[in-house]
Image 1 (tube, rainbow, N blue to C red):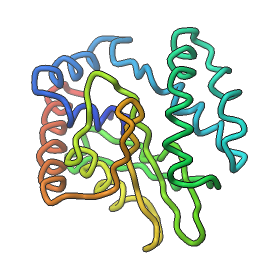
Image 2 (tube, helix red, strand yellow; image 1 turned 120 degrees about the vertical axis):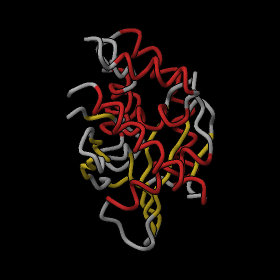
Image 3 (cartoon, helix red, strand yellow; image 1 turned 60 degrees about the horizontal axis):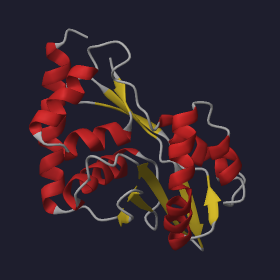
Length: 196
C-alpha cells in the first residue's frame, strides 16, 4: 500500500485535475514520485527538537543534497517568522498512521512542529510546494483528517503553514469535509486501479 506524505496529499487535493494526474502518474515511475521537500521537513523537525529555534539553521545546513539545502536555507527566514508568530516553545507532535477507507493508500500524520503556549498546543504541517497553493478549503481538509486521527486535547489546534505563501491555515470549512471525502475516494480508486 503506498504511503504518501501529508504535504503530498495536500498538493494533490489542491491541484487542478491535469496537474494531479501528472503527479499521480509519477508514482508509477521509479524515482519520479520523489518528495523533494522531505529532507527540508525532517530538518525543521530536528531543528526544533531541543524546544527552541536555536538548532534550525544547523539542521537545515546539514541537508546532504546541495540543491535541497539551498532551497531550505532560502526558506529559513520565512520558517522562523511563521513559527515565531505561533510561539517559541516547541514540543514533540503526536503521530499516527491513517489508512484510506478502501485500504489503497495510507498517510503518516506526523506534523513537523508542535508549539506550546501555556496550556495551548498547536501542531503544524509545513507545506513548501511553490507551484501549487493550498486553499483554505484544501488545507481545512488535511486539518479535518488530522483532527480525526491524532490524539490531541480539546485546547490543541492543528494547522497548515504554507511557507512560500506565508500563510497559516487553522480552520476547517464546511466544504473542507466534502473535499476530503471526494478526494480520498478519488485517490482510493486511482491507487486501486494500479494494482498495488
